[in-house]
Picture (cartoon, rainbow, N blue to C red):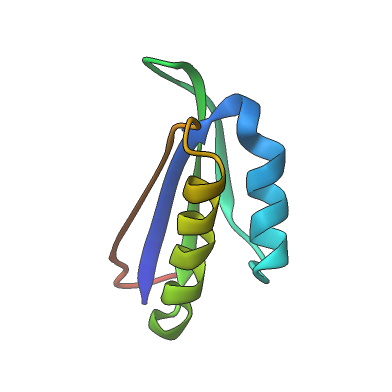
Length: 83
């Protein structure tokens, strides 16, 4: 299992939420309004089974390609346990 983490500009919240819903993401933890050089930012944490991670990363790649000027960064790392 992996933890997917993504940070993005606050003004872009609705397209991100819609893209995750379209990809079948059922639940996630969203943190609102951190700061970054471009202004306000949000962050999303999603525990993802290994076999589902490639599809989620493709969603992010598609968003980055469609909106190259939006500050989107995604990271994955091992998740040992999810309770």
